[in-house]
Image (cartoon, rainbow, N blue to C red):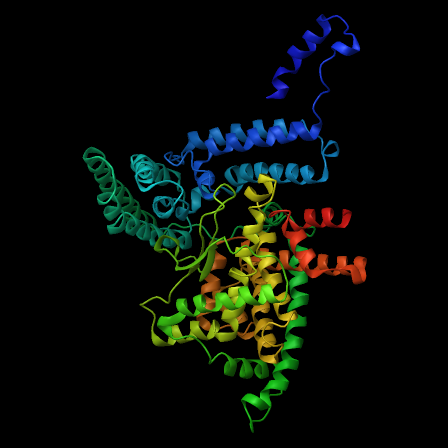
Length: 586
């Protein structure tokens, strides 16, 4: 906005007579003050452009709006992006304070990435799962930001455009991938469940007028028809036609997406090489621990000469301890209080007991992506809302062998590590801190590698501080878990760039990752549905751990682990390389 008025200001300045010093206007605002004003305007404008993103961040002013994903919307987004990048260019980096430099880089990365996604990657053409009305409606229905009546009116307004939404989705698709098509069918069928009895019951007990209830009921019926039509289109016109593109995006797109998404000090190829090296280190440690444990769990049996067979034999014994098939979600719930107590007792960081964590079964519209657990956290505008720890129950259709394979993967030891990662002091704790950040930019445009990296870092940190009694059993299965993180990076590139076949990928995960077949097959599915995200865990973790070691060496005896954690988390979800700049400066 400021650039638009510069010529007029220049003319006015030339026309005015010189002023006496006492009559001069106040000093021009600093670059930082002007940049703060720009950020405020930009975010306000962004919420109007992307109401779905706004709602996900806890800003609900535009919940009644449904963006139709057509060419008009993409042109509008392109204009918005170019205009915003132009305004951003008015603030040279060296004119800003360090914290604002990071915000400047985050905004530039977000805007450039958005344009690259739309113009080059073009997933809107090949990913039918990008279109799922039920997901957004489910979040509105289950939210607590407004009273029920207002939430239902917002839902009604959105559903009024369901037919246009799915018509645009069909028009966008050009030879989708088979894998994303199957996911879209599964998740949209889950979306139909959102528009089912629970919503109808909410309408009945609401305070809406009879006319409003009738109108909403009609819109629900029309939306269901639109979703059913989309699912039928995907089954018949897409799957039935057998005309698919590959899910693999190739080296050039992968490397560019890595740069946008991870924002690491290292390239995708460098992180891949680091992962290969770390894999060898983990296998050496696993071999040593398995050799010590073998006589305890397999007494009297000959010790395998092959290290991989030795590790597999011991891991096979440890994973026999697991939750019952119908008690998996409850087993997760029972462990959370113990993690809270350990963090407090060992003074690892300050926790906020006023921020609720709710363990729940993963909603149907979120299932099918290959991620068995996840966290849905409130955004910075909705800090008091629940954080949901989503745990996917074992599918009823699974055979006993499939269920046993999954439960052995998430055995009693590994389940504790999973809960550290997803809940305390991992994702849940980090996101509570992120919402306190004075910079909305760092919270809204959070870096996935920092978020995932922190969760992985806390697993190792907790064990280093004595969680699990420092037993070989706990460390061996952490090694196995961390090997999974490491193999995620290797698999990500192998699938998307190096064209590894499914049987070879699954064999790698089973043979060198000691993963159960169900886990390995699920990871293959996930690697076909995502690109780069699987690399975020290892990339972020290694940078955080290296930063901690660097600061330990600098500060010596003055280094305090709790202070490091709280300072690190105070910067919101900024990329680790930028947090490193600030912490080393301080």
